[in-house]
Image (cartoon, rainbow, N blue to C red; front, side, top):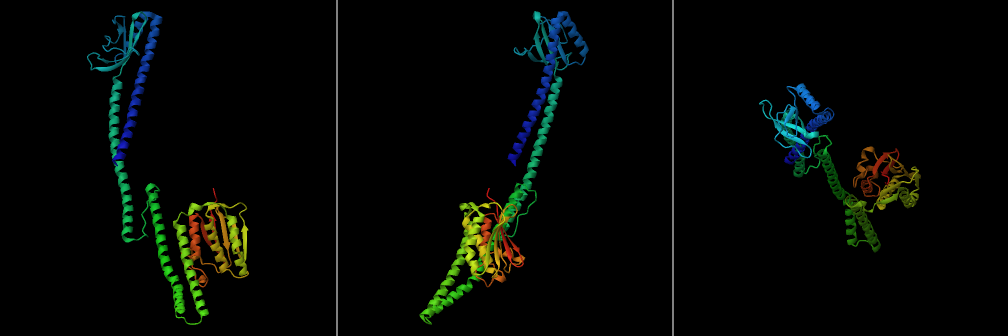
Length: 446
């Protein structure tokens, strides 16, 4: 607060000083200009009318301006003896030898001393002319202006202190709200709490919004960790139990060698399934927490879709399903991203579409536009997913009731969501009745 008040007061003092300087300089320049004009006129009159004309003109101006005139005239000979004018004698202060200007003390009829400013001009024949002004009005304005500016400075200081106090108090209340909420979250571990915002959209409000966004993201991650832990315990318990039973069976040496070999093969399949699950989890974690944009480069989205369709076309044919690639974009869909990640995400969606489609049906992979973004849509004719589950299917290990009996570990769409998050892509589900369409849209490469 002290720094703010100091800077504010210094700034205002500089402004007030400039106002004072410019006002006084302007008024002094006006007085000097008026004196210069009179000196020039009198000098010209002396040149044309001589000594008598000069004496008469000065006497006329003195009579005209009496008794309250601020004008000062003195016309002398070469010995500084007064010829005419309203000044009794030559000032004691010497004039500036370069410019001829002189500031001196003026006393009239026993009145108080006043400051006068004049210009000294030497005429032909050694005659000397002094023309000036009584600048007591300027001095009075100067004192009044100084008083006004002094009060303005005091008022500025008071307003600066009050403004700084009010701003500091408001800011401290908002910072205290952030500290209070943060401490409450630390003590209770309740990540659902949020820091209140004022809606002013200032720097602190934006900071509060970012902190709330960070809390929301941390809450999502912690919820995901809990769900993963619960899901691992639930989904892996059955295969681990089967694996243990088969190992017990192989250990008991019951049956012939062929039966024992079959038991070992089944045990290995269970181990492979468990390893695949953990590998999928590790891959999702690396995508979400690693430097996933390190391998980004310019990609042709149509080329990636073609490779995915080419890879899964034999799988679709084996299930009597037609896999079709369509391009409605009409321009080259160039994006920035990691090719392997995008390929894996699209492959997971296509694999699900083939898995849940009925024989003699079609799975369409279509390129197009969505909100000025490159879009890939994968449509199938399967049982679809209810609208209320469209968000939950992206959770790890979540499986809808219709997919409980199918192969998989419930991590395919979680990986798709992680890849989309890294690429700032949008993934949405659309119910087709029957079937489901998965839309993934990417920003075009700059």
